[in-house]
Length: 444
Image 1: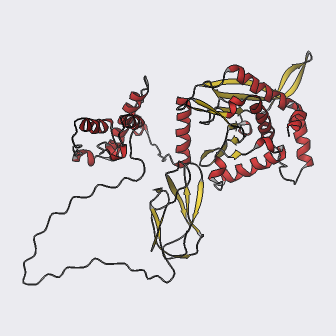
Image 2 (image 1 turned 30 degrees about the vertical axis):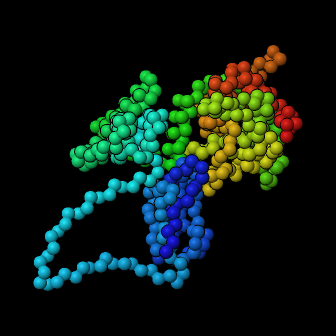
């Protein structure tokens, strides 16, 4: 029998949610046939079977979360006999009295797969004190390691004593799920407040007391977005620089080229492709926005390549496919890449590698509406461009009021490594490029 364990799905991915099984128990499959579709916090992936044979069993149903290293399927080789062993019965002589019933042995503690549950403040405290949090006996609800658990280990080590076992009260073990959730929320709030001065996170009220509610688990991609946005907004000091680009000439050129290129690759030719090229020009002029800050080494990492991420709205959450080497691609090629990556992201067919390696992100709400937006930086990048809807506006040109097509731009950037003057230079270069399509063509 071959036990197939959930393989490493990529850097930083520890678990996946089962979206669909492509096999059934008892079914015979070939090597590399689709086995299961999993959704990680980055993308949906189809995992092929590493061996051919008969499916003896599968672990988990649709919606379950499986940790890397867990057995997800058992496969029997072709011709291998599948034996299900029944427990043997002990023979007891008829004349002998029945043996005394021995007390059952104590249940072994459940094995912990993946990171143990603990609040961020608890993890940091354990790390600072040199304590392996995975070896700390948890006493919190749901097997959560608390701050007191870590302190208990530290006190025992300082006295040279073994860590005393702690019994969790039976009442707490048997607590109702709602009560346990409230305790976990209160503990998390207390720890978060201890980690960040003046931060006071209160547990949510019981919304059911006012009416009917519906609950949906925060899964995979949506959960990853939430974590990244919180990290970005807490860690990075955001500053905004706003401007407008007159894209009247660019729009006339784009519409002519769309008609001329009907049926060809990249013929869709949205304004976003031109913006990507203008952003690339801006990054060359101001390298600080194509960098990342390493807070541990206190270094600024300047990237000498240009990979532009495009924030894409999908049914499962926000995804950011990355267009690689935009400095070496034509606008037509960039347009084709945008269409291809966005389509596959929405269909759940994008590869994890196509979501990595970005140096700068663009989020475009123009097609959905809205005059402008203030975006959140896609950490660990240091800047993001928010693009609104092109609108016809009255403007003054050569002393005359004329109607022009105006594109609103908002640059959010990390004030730790860039200043307002850098932002002004970056956006000004973008505006210059977008206002004259001939400049973009020269860049290409």
